[in-house]
Image 1 (cartoon, rainbow, N blue to C red):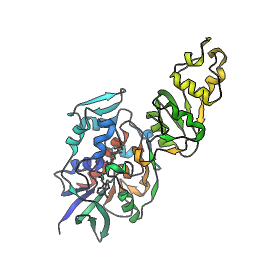
Image 2: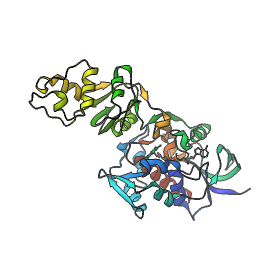
Image 3: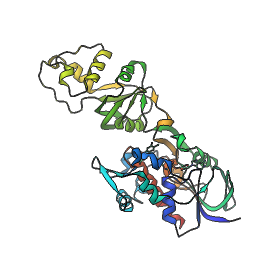
Image 4: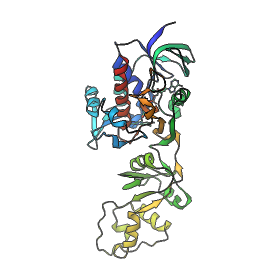
Length: 360
Ligand SMILES: Cc1cc2nc3c(=O)[nH]c(=O)nc-3n(C[C@H](O)[C@H](O)[C@H](O)COP(=O)(O)OP(=O)(O)OC[C@H]3O[C@@H](n4cnc5c(N)ncnc54)[C@H](O)[C@@H]3O)c2cc1C
C-alpha cells in the first residue's frame, strides 16, 4: 500500500494554503468530503476578507500565549503579497476583501481525495487514516478540519475527536462571532427589527465601536459579533451615544438625539420614560450611554462564523503534538479564534505556513 509523506485532513483555507506551500517538495494528499472550500466561498459576504492591516495577537482569543509567534511565521504583509495578483479592495481602510471569493479559491484550490474522514490511528511510525473510501497511510498527518460552526457547509467535530484520541485537551468549545439572544426584559429590541446604529459595545475587557443591528432573534451586526467572542455568561454594556456631547435644547429626545427615532421611542417606552425635552433628560442620556444587560445566549453554531476553543496550543510545539510525533494541527481546530475582519483567515495562513516548514 502507498505511503504518503504527508496527509492533510481538510481542504479548507488552512489545508489548501499548506498544500500550496509544500507542493513539489513532498508527496502529499488532501482528504476532504467536499471539492469546494465552502467557507471561503461564502466568507465576507462572498468577497472573502482575507486579512487586515491591524493583525496582532490582541485580535485573537486563546488560552495560549503563543499566538504572536505563530502569526510571525506569515504576517499580514506576506498574505497581501501572496494574493497581490488577484483583484481586491481595502475596506474601512484596513480590511482586505477579494473582488470575489472565487479568486481566492482559484488561487488555492487543488485536487483532493473526496471522502469522509472517519478516524486516525498510529501504528509504529505510520498513520492509518480510515475514510469512507478506504484506508490511507502516511508518515505525517496535519489536521485542518476546522471548527463545528455552520454545519450546513460540511463542518464536523472530527478534528477534535482525533486530538482527544491522541490525548489532547480541547479548550471548551462555543459558538463565536455570532448574534446574541435576549432575555424577556430586552424583548423590546426585537420590535426594532431592521434598525441599525453605531454603538460602543463592551464585553469583558474589550470594547468594539461599530454597527449593531436589531433583529427578530436578538442583536447582531459587527460590534455584537465581535463582542460575542469575549462574552461569557453575564452582562454586556452598550453605549448608544458614543459621540454625543450634551447641548441645550427644548427639542424632545427623539428629535434631538442622533439616533433612529424608532429606537429612541422603543427605548423610552420599554423603560417607562417619556419623550422629554433634551434639556431635562440628562439622566436618560446617561442611561443610553451605559446600557447594561445580560444576553440570554447566542444564535448558536448554525449561525456562528467560528468556533471558540479547540485543541490546546500549550500541548503543541510549533503546532506539532507534544504527545504524538509528526501529528500537526492548523487553522480553526486549534484554540485560537480571531475577531471579525480577516483575522481568522490570517490565522489559517500563518499556522499553515509555519507547519509547512517542518514538512518539506
Ligand atoms: C459565514 C462565514 C463567513 C466568514 N467570513 C470570514 C471572513 O471574511 N474572513 C475571515 O477571516 N474568516 C471568515 N470566516 C471564518 C473562516 O471561514 C474560518 O475561520 C476558516 O474557514 C477556517 O479554516 P480551516 O481551514 O481551519 O477550516 P474549514 O475552512 O472549516 O475547512 C475544514 C475542511 O475540512 C472538511 N471536513 C471537516 N470534517 C470532515 C470530515 N469528517 N471528513 C472530510 N472532510 C471534513 C470540510 O469539508 C472543510 O473543507 C467566516 C466563516 C463563516 C461561517
